[in-house]
Structure formats: structure tokens, C-alpha cells
Image (cartoon, rainbow, N blue to C red; front, side, top):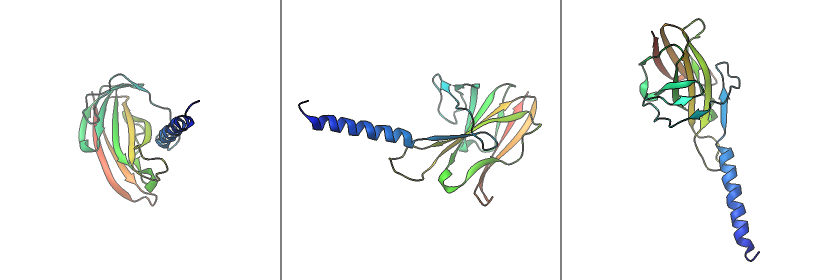
Length: 165
């Protein structure tokens, strides 16, 4: 090998790239705060909040963001709506359902936290909580999500209504 410093530089770059990809870790939870399945997505996708939908393991979905507070979503039975809200798990705050959906025509399928990209070694920082709800029956369901801290104090709320014909 003529120039070992080139090899060393390439190796260092590879290690930095690998550590950055691990720093972007995801934590996945179901409605009870337990680990949940990874949600694969495929196809083109769409801009969050555009409500044009993208395809996931749960089929074509509608999408809401924090800009859609108080929105009403018309959702056929069997379809899903994805809600993406800003969050920062390092503060102890997390998005929780305001009331149980038991017996309602809409169910929470998954809740996933995804950290925003940050430099290696960076502690804290924000991310997004992604919740997926599915319409299982006809009716209207008002869903309130509360951003609660460890003390139980609600920092902010997000509400939307699902109408299923």
C-alpha cells in the first residue's frame, strides 16, 4: 500500500458514518407504552400534512401534522390515519391518548418515536412521535392527544375527529 494515510482516512470516514446512523435510533411503542412492530413504508410517500396519503404495511393512509389540530378526517372502515407530532423524549414528555378508545370505532395501531438527525455524541434534541389509527367500524370518534410530562402535567394537546361512514 503506497499511502496508508488514505486508507486510515477512509476507515475513519466509514466509522463516523456508521456511528451517525446508529445515533438516529428509533424507539417504538404501542398504545400501552410497550414495544411495537416496525412499520415498513414503500412507494413514493407524500409530504407530511398533505393528506394525500402514502402506502405502509397498513395500506393507504391519510396524514395529519400539528398544523391539522381540530381537523376532521373522513376515513372508510379498514383505512388508517397517521398523526405526526413534534416531540422530545429527552424531556420526559410524551404524547398520550386523552381518553381510552376501547369500544370506539377507531383503534390505535402503533406509536413510534423517531429522533431528528443529530451529530454523534449529541445528547437530547427533538424528534417526532408518529401514531397510526385505524377505522374499525362506523361512527364518529373525537381523539385528543396530550403531551404529558413525568409529573402528569399536560404541556399541549392535539385533537382531531375521525368520521367513518
